[in-house]
Length: 439
Ligand SMILES: [Zn+2]
Image 1 (tube, protein in one colour):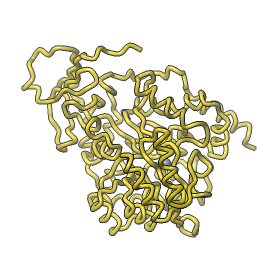
Image 2 (tube, protein in one colour):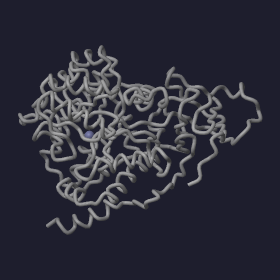
Image 3 (cartoon, helix red, strand yellow):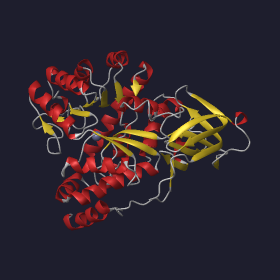
Image 4 (tube, helix red, strand yellow):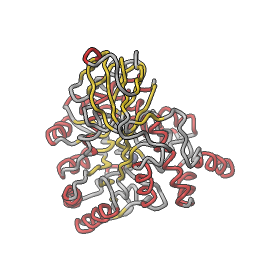
């Protein structure tokens, strides 16, 4: 694929430009990119009538920074295939087929305007090197897809959530330190800890209330990761598990069912991020009944989604830093514009549309540790941006009306295919297997 020459200048003219640094909108603006970077934006009246380079008419459109999704699983496509069928299937695949699945999910994210994702748990099988190859291929522009940051193998306790996926089981501070170092050596961009049950604390299920790690293990993980300059993301549910994580200094609470007024105050004080993943159980609750989920599971999803909403409302009021993430890949949660479902839920919980835009751009970039490069349209930033119809700073749903996705200064064709032709590899095969397996 031909790359544009490094100096190519593009002028986006007549758009509203959302400034997520100052939480303002510039009307009738010009935004200029040169090569892979934003060179600046300002009022149209301040630019000459004749502009050198390419001119893109953006009348009626709004430009926002490329979106982040801070919690995805590229190994999973988010379709309705039940895990008892999907997971053994994924474990049976060879690395090139797994690579094709991951690449396809990265492509779907990018086409929906998600220019950066954080993969917070590799799949149930395969090699972590396959993810690293994918990351490098995307970085070099060999594939069409989001930029990817990787947790590689999460730390789990023996028998806990995540044990039967790619993970590192640890007991005690020494093993925890070693596991973090092994992830660092392998090339992880963040350290993921599985500090609680998969679904969160559920009524009548005492096992779901366990705290997996001892405080000393959490501190060992955080100290070691921070020593290497990496953030720590904790899959955490339940008031006590979350409190342990915040006290140990983790950077983000993922999911976070069971927040209390005291906990959100502490998180706000300490600067702990919340990655809410509200869309996951919201969509499960909505889609599950039509796909044969039991009443008990649908009931559990309803319980969790309600607790998560209550927690997010508290967190918004307390001023907790909220970085958008969905859990894309989870059942009924396909990659792509599900990020907009997530942001719509934030707005329902009391966040302003501008706040929701910040959570998926600048705040997310702060969490990932790339705020000097990504997440806003300041001069010199990487030119990741979306041109959308309407005004997402007023109606967040306008993020679905994409006119153009730009990654590193280059417009992505709406029908950009994966060079691997990865198109529903998992989908077709898994569907066929389902038909054969189902009674
Ligand atoms: Zn997840």
